Length: 389
Image 1 (cartoon, rainbow, N blue to C red):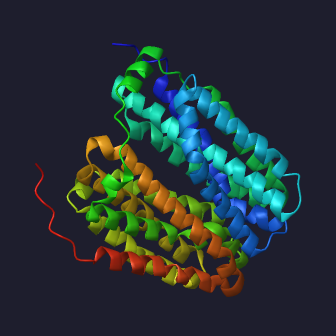
Image 2 (tube, helix red, strand yellow):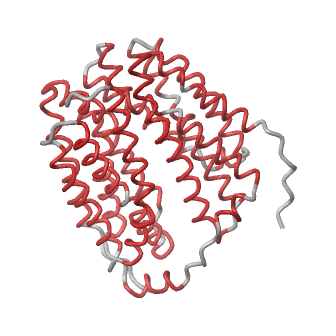
Image 3 (cartoon, rainbow, N blue to C red):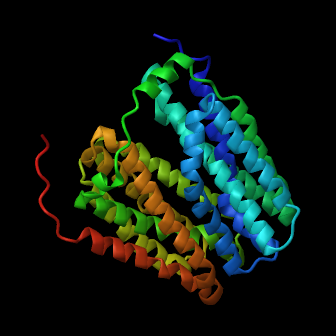
């Protein structure tokens, strides 16, 4: 048996921390940064949608590069450095188009590192007996901590603090990429030789049950678009401080972690469709009540519904893949689900700008449509599932 590289799990955890430092600042404060650069709500929506679409476009090339790179660390280093190199000039340019292109490519390039790092982490699970959850959870903890810290800094130093914080986050991600372990060559050679042949997407999409899960998962994911794009801006308009906004974002991730913590034995007893149905109902409640949550306590309560609108729905999707998709097709199934949800979220994010620009707070309840449509999809009669062989 080949020995694990020194501190394999710790070094992967450090990268998850660095990666989610970017996410913990970009998710709450990037729309605010765009607004301060003079962009309209419609332009902000486009700037947030573009990297989602660009990532889907770049993903096949990025995956091929990661497979052909000397090692996974090399690929992650390249992706994070390109992200930093594109984001740096974005803080200096003016005008909608330069900001759109530079920030979009920067965000998409950084996002390409996630499949490569997940593959490296799963090598640790398969080959060295490591626990994926124990490595990945540090990313969520990082998101919570940096959201809180970023909120406090923004509250005390104001708009001038945003560009330095965002640049610093990209630097941290790049530095932690250099610290990643390298998979021993003999292990990677064995893994590459054992890769199954590519499976046609059509073979997976022949399953009506799985199509229902993909569609409902994508609709509920897309229902978060106005919130992700304009949640922080709306809270600012309500008079919430930077630290309070950071707390609100952190609360959603804490709720998400709590749901994943109980998603073992308890959730495995449920059908995937029931978990997704819970998320759909929660989405209707969350987005329908969002404009009425004008105080911190009510807003925090709604943020806790992220445990259902995201975590329960995501867990349901993963359970569906585990139960309904053969081992040889799992990677393809993951790719299809990510592509479908990514396209849905990108399209809805593009619409979120005009919606918020014309409707203001009333744009949030329009996202109830995603939950309603998901319920209708889940209620479509299906043939009884045959017993497993």
